[in-house]
Image (cartoon, rainbow, N blue to C red; front, top):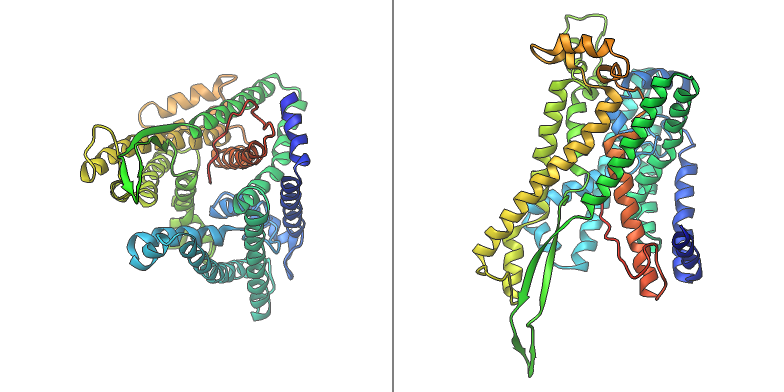
Length: 472
């Protein structure tokens, strides 16, 4: 603890680092203040009633990444979601677009051009999404009917999204850490007190079983955080050797180094994709007008069919795990190309000892990547599933053959009755939240640590140790 406070003092002893940290905190405060400004024409009481019905759909995931701004329809309701979507779309497009692929290989100039296109795409996506949001608000009686409310909502929310994007870019350039990730991080952290309050209310009730359940949940969260840190720091170091060669009159090369490959190379993206895909049918039905009192209509049957497959349902969890594994492999193949890496190694005179350059090296790297991705996919599925089961339970009654009898046994057994129903806490303790919080915290601390060590100050870890962060 003494080293921690010493590192905090060192941060404020370095003028440039102190300025960056204070600048970051200032912009995060601006983001939080804007979250309390509600968009014009919103009926708050009706919005609260509607949100109690749709908070478990894809809109709940959107609210998570907006820091709770969507549930109140503030001027920052969409948060950084359109920007993240635009970034992912352009990243995926580099695989099929030779022009984008060429820009990506041009270094800083190409990166700036892609960032400019990302901003343009963000404007378009934000305008489209806000128009759907405005229509949804009107159909649920939250906003006034007519084109005036529609245009005002689209203009307000789109402008708010662009301002949030600007805040994130300013934090990245002039602050500390990744700005977009920090905005998401801040939104989740600010929602934690509500979840903690729920925990204390359970303990205050005096029920010993509830107290034991809370202690078990705290122990599980601490264990998950330690597990996430352990895996996120995991690297598979591939040895790389560079042959000696003549550059002018000098003999260069002959170096021994390594290529660190992360265990979880895809970050939290597969979990987000999987959650979005599963929640999409219910969310689409929220924007479709239908009579819920007419169970024979097609819309009602579709909505009721997907409503039963919510968190805790065995079939839901099976599909959820399958989607996480699929998106993990899909995303890793997008961001890491073994053939391209092998070709770059060959061009720069590098090779893996005992492996032929070229195609053999690509196959060797692909084998390592496949094994790492499999481990990473299982890790993401585990981290996403365990908190979800604790929160929503596991509906064992849906299991074939043994389900009904096992459900009756668990429901009648003290201390195990929470398994079919869950503990009923808020989403703040979910696996996605933990992955984002831990990942962003590690990345930010790693950047601060690097700044301190570079200026010969002792960092958080002391002794010259370095913490390797990751991007969400």
